[in-house]
Length: 371
Image 1: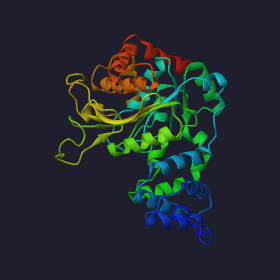
Image 2 (image 1 turned 120 degrees about the vertical axis):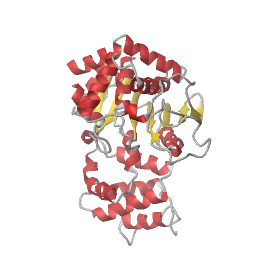
Image 3 (image 1 turned 180 degrees about the vertical axis):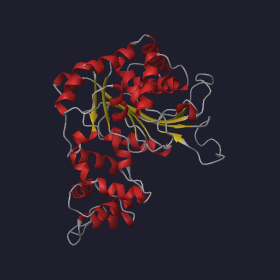
């Protein structure tokens, strides 16, 4: 039987070369083809140039939600799962993470949010790495705060059970990625993004049930949320924040619009969300005027790991009362909403403020440092 358009026969050419031709012709990949591609990509001795050509062709075609989900499943199949016990698995487990890529140099908002939300009693499995597209990644800033990040899987599982927070350092769980590094670097040198720019938040080795993800472009919200939903999460929210007030797309921008891979206190936010009991929804969202202090993206700027750690300490201690705190409260509000502990983002932001002002967020950080 002849191969259909999504079941290309791979008998006469190397797997990745054949699939690259299919992508260049505009053909989407089936789940089986993605699995074959991943198997080829993570082989150490396969040519870097062919890997880069495949990743480039996939990006230029445009990744579908189905392709992204298939990549996640195939890569998770090659990862090392943490040995969580039944008690931990019975809880809702949350991650808060942005894809990066907004190139705005903000401080580690998602990492700060994860600590605040953990102070509310939510079990947080924070997945991340050292800096790649920024000056300080989540691993860098948590390490500067004194939180252990280079834990073995069994240690991370114990921390999650005992403290409701653990950092899952990506290289510990995805050893196959080291054979992709050269191809990803080659694409980056050519100015070409790849599917791996999206995958970081989706590859948490812990069995998440709820998740908040930030993306750098509003058109990514719906497909990323569809991916989360297809992966079996109970609740998920994907957000992209504008730096200008008004609903995204409401009027022609005066210049190229810029976006945060976070909910924005500076303008409107595009949100795609799903809940088991309420279905799927995509909509613009913006707080009422006057809710947040007037600010610009410069007010959210971070720096190196030491600078960002100092910012986080000031926020958790309650010493920071300006726009950086506002950004954390807003995003923590969304995280608490998706975690199911509040009924709205605004209510969640109020709860996050209380957690900080009562010293509970700082106490959680101290607990994580002392263990």
